[in-house]
Image (cartoon, rainbow, N blue to C red):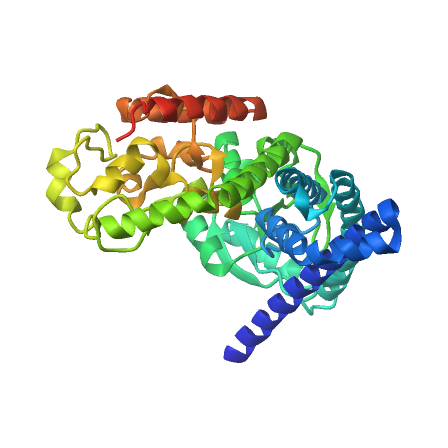
Length: 455
């Protein structure tokens, strides 16, 4: 067992290392090509000293767009283009702020274009190599099968004719519909990369969409056996890589250009924000350390998209024993519903009260945005204490990636009831657009300056 684990880990390291080297090489060649085009060999030499920093930024942005995540489809030109646009925007902003760097905006744009072209070619060649590995059974794509007992057995028999690249790591019964909580736990525990759905025609449209959303929000590919064609709203994609004909299922409302641009906006603004606000982060951290004992940063488990738990980063605004004292203040809760809110919470430190009034305590969540666990705009992620007390209907607000700000924040924040918060979150999810996000971001600035509903 340990040997298999070592082999699996080694494969993962080699796979990511190959992509890292390819992407770094693409950017270096792009920078040198752009510099040579604008100033010859001498200019190319002048640009070399900036290359390490620019390569680190390039690779960081590619990682932020999940282009090294083995659980996602690596052949994702939209994400690659968005990452290149983000790198260009951040680099051009850096050139404007620090002109003494000597780098020109025109060189940045040309370098990004060349790196995008070269990176796309190298990733295509990498993809072809991976497909060869799969066909020969040298790489693994853990697979989960959904269906009743007879259908799952039929799928397993047909998969025996395929190479051993798609091991079945779990099964979910479809007798009384899909048990989404069980499926989520299985997907997270097995690190599955593929889901095969058999018998989708027996699912109600709403149940099928819920299933598709859960799988899509985890970056996992779902394919259905033929027979579900009448339920599919999008163009089917045929595949026989597993030894049986399959239709690739895509959740239609999460796969479009605006979604890619939303991620590009998240990555660009969060990166710039972390760089620009780093002096403020240092000053706040020192103030927190001087005000009360304990770490400057607070990490808390919160429920994210499709109920997936993640670690949310914040500046510590309470005393170190605040979570242990939760039961002491439960009776003083001033909010309705499952959430907890107090205007004069005795656990909040003097510095923490200031940070909360100006929403400074939430700035470290820019790290979550860069990691893809949060977005700049979306429903607020709630602590597990609140999430576990929510009803199933209220959990529908988790159908989108959580955000640092949202429609709820600009509509009253803590002054609103829990039901109003859920209603506003659901309205945002159903009426989402990139322009809606930009409107919320701009209105958030005014809300913060007016300190509305913050305590």
